[in-house]
Length: 213
Image: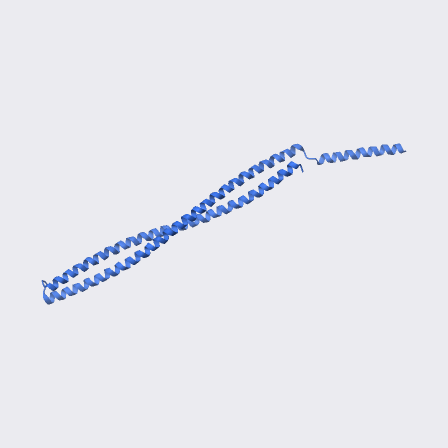
């Protein structure tokens, strides 16, 4: 009876040991599968590093573009403001020359009246009539000079307005470029953050696979 118990216990112990060994074998990782996982993790890590480096390069290039856009914008604003000052100066010159021209025209009209009066009173060859003709001629010369100045001021004003408008268009373009470059820079920064997360995750997976659990 005792011998039968001993045999039965031995058989049960062997069976239990076999069951444990089988379970342990089933739970142990396949070496070839583990090596493939490590290889894939290394590949993902290298790819993440490349993506991170590329996105950093893009971000830095965008930042340089932003800095250039800011300089261009500042320069165009300076030009626009100078053109506006020129326009204001041209307007003052134009207004002054118009006032001078109008005054000369009044003088001409006055000289004509005076000449007609002196011719009637003293005769066409009188000294008074000759003096009136001289004044009339001088006022006409001044009036014509003022008119030339007015024409010149108008050209300057039109040119400065064209320059000012061109500078304003450049400013508007610079603003659009700056906005677009900032948008690209911000997107690249988001990509960098994502790349860092991916790299951190893949490195964690690699360490996990190397430990084999």
